[in-house]
Amino acid sequence: MAAMVRIKDIVDYEGVRDNQLVGYGLVVGLRGTGDRLTNTLFTRETLISMLNRLGVNIRDQEVQLQTHDVAAVMVTATLPPFAHGGGHIDVTVSAVGDARDLTGGTLLVTPLQAADGEVYAVAQGSLVTNAFAAGGAAATLTQNIPTSGHIANGAVVEREVPVTLGAGGVIHLSLRNPNFTTATRIVQAIDRHVAHGLARVDDPRTIAIDLSGRDPAETLYRIGDLTVEPDTMAKVIVDEASGTIVMGDNVRISTVAIAQGNLTIQITELPQASQPAPFSNGTTAILPRTQINASTDNSHRLGILREGPTLASLVSGMNALGMGPRDMISILQAIKADGALQADLEVR
Image 1 (cartoon, rainbow, N blue to C red):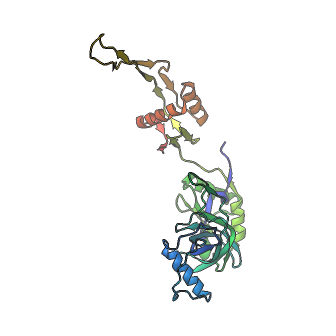
Image 2 (tube, rainbow, N blue to C red):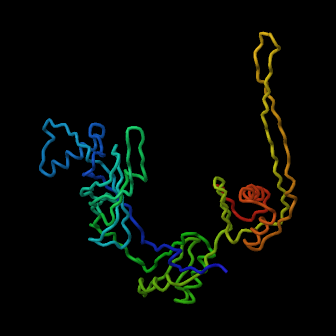
Image 3 (spheres, rainbow, N blue to C red):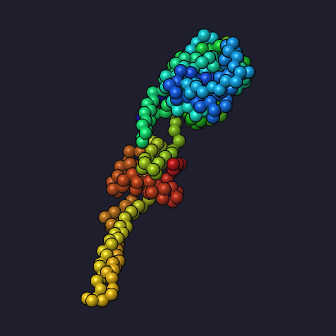
């Protein structure tokens, strides 16, 4: 029997979504592993502009900045739904110049913008890279990525994204794996346990919930905890590089006859030395001698793979024919070409 899952684990709620944020800033306090200001002009200009805002005017001075303790970075974060002003979110910091290591650096105040150009959070804090880099004159050792770091709770939310559940009296549930059968089962579960006629199927992905005269939070809470049996498509995924095969429970194979034999070719080089005649001016030569043997393994006889009602019987039938993962991959491809595999075959 298939597993029962909660509705809230297989659907998304309309309007409840994450928002991506991005910003550009500076990391300071590096141990000589930052950008080289003579090569990365945007880092140099950003540093000068920041110093000018802080009251240190060096733009008009003939000063050659030589510090290697500063790096230009891009800061990214995900603003979750229902985040309120003053809340904290995690940020990821990545070098954009020629900095070699951000370990031990501190990110300066960096506004984070969304796609609409508005600032929704401000990031600042000490970086953690979980990386190690060491080197000498002849060799270097690097573990993980020292040019990308993380700041837990490193940004403060400044602007909220309003979320209105059930605007217009209707909210839509979006199935993560679109399927008419699963959508219909969800509607039937809501009819039985919440209210009849409350839900309807709009398409394989969308279920509409009528919230007229109902509390949206309480209704979605009751619906989310209901359990249904999700339907899955018959599909076989094959990874030829690793020899991995993943098959769903609904995979079926019509009756087919399978024969598999292995051709083995052995090539052996047996060079021989050719000596010249005594007192001649000849030289010793190496004469190539190649021996080729070909044999066919006939241990795998023609077998009949009966139609399997379950995944277990399908796997048992293929194992009974002495097939390994690599053999199964080629056989599944041949069965699909023959039209006997009643499932989608995806080869990666």
